[in-house]
Amino acid sequence: MKKILLCLVMMVCTYATAQDVMSFTQLAPTTIKGNKFPRIDNQRRAYFQLEAPQAQRVQIDISGKKYDMVRDDKGWWNGHTDPLVVGFHYYYLIVDGVPITDPASDIFYGTCQFASGIEIPEGPEGDYYRPQMNTPKGQIRSFQYYSNANQEWRRAMVYTPAGYDQNITQRYPVLYLQHGMCEDETGWAKQGYTQNIMDNLISQGQAVPMIIVMDSGDIETGYALNELGRDKYGNTFYDVLIKDLIPAIDSNFRTLTDRDHRAMAGLSWGGHQTFDVVLNHMDLFSYMGGFSGAIRNLDIKESYGGIFSRPDEFNKKIHYLFLGCGTEENMGTAALVKKLRDADIKVDEFISQGTAHEWLTWRRCLKEFVPHLFK
Image (cartoon, rainbow, N blue to C red; front, side, top):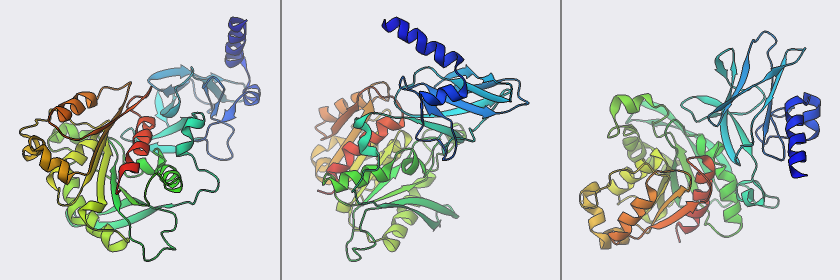
């Protein structure tokens, strides 16, 4: 019976008209309001539609696979994917060999360029990154400042907790939160759902109210990596952060400015940058985290002035070190944790079940990391 039902579902997915598809699917959370597609069915297949009457071939390019779309007699192309894993996916529509963003879906910077994105919903386990009723709401603010180090105007996205504008005498600790390679300062706010995660954790008493600063790590493209090499990639951000961004945040927001109230964390290459910044400026930071961190070839005796060979000093200065990753990726996190623990370094490890090098892993890491800060 199950096989018969599955065959019927596959026939519907293959031959259904756009109107039929709408009867057994729901809009994707990332669909732009007013559009009828993209949509998702209960098997986590994604359905797309594009009006392109002059096109000869249109495909969906998502999760490393391409799917041909079918043209109707009115010039509308329709197609669907295989079942997708839950979480966030970048995708393109390919029109006669040219990849384009889907005009019916939100766009995101995250593949060294803008791409369309679709969210395949989790069940109730994903409520931690969804807005909840009766939960006080913070804000994500766009903060512009001038960097003398790079001689340029820059923008940071800044989360302020609920009540920030009402509690005008209260000061807050600060987390500097970095994106990964080929992303920018909008990643954590948009793909990462930072505001919802923080609003929910603070409302539930799991995290203290804090300010979160999300700036570009100067790693938006991969070209610079090839030109500069690993040792210099993204290093222009370091002086920006220390000499320009931290002073600008402390001058324009009500922050607690001592090291005991300042943290830094980052995903992928942002984790690499976190190690470089914090371990070279332990007078400024006392909490640190790497989410699928690109931290390679760490030498306990030599790296960062040999601080890991002095565990008593490290454990005293760094109040909390967190390293997280997904079970379906291989960033060397488990080996790094073992190396640090063998050196008597205190480190907290988190493993995200069933996720790879992706935003669902990093959302979960943020959820696990911030409850340990500033307590």
